[in-house]
Amino acid sequence: MSQEIPPWLREQLTRLDNLQQNLQSVAMQRQQVDAELADAEKTLEELKNVTPEEQIYKYVGSLLVKVTKEAITKDLEERKDISNTRTLVLNKQESRLKENIKELQTKIDEMIKARTQGPTQGS
Image 1 (tube, helix red, strand yellow):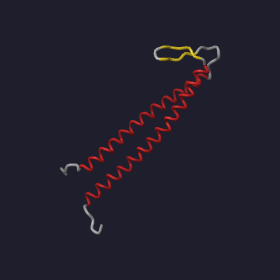
Image 2 (spheres, rainbow, N blue to C red):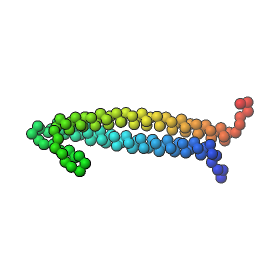
Image 3 (cartoon, rainbow, N blue to C red):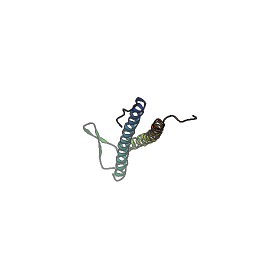
């Protein structure tokens, strides 16, 4: 069992590791976008309780700037739309990466099985 990993297997395992890292990165990005979306939705819900007489401020860098309810609502709706689009894209990337990982794992398993069984007769 002290055999060295063949180069062809090492290459496929490296590829598999890269795909898994990409999947983890996409999942983290999706979680971040989900949090941004939830924040925008919560803020929009809170804005429904704001009366026209109340003043609204938002952070712009390190400053607090007075804004109108309509302006901040429009901004939040745009952020929400962008987050929804990003979520769709990230979900598609995640699905594609999972499929690629599954295919590569199957390929690696088949290569190892074929290698350990040796050449078959009549093939």
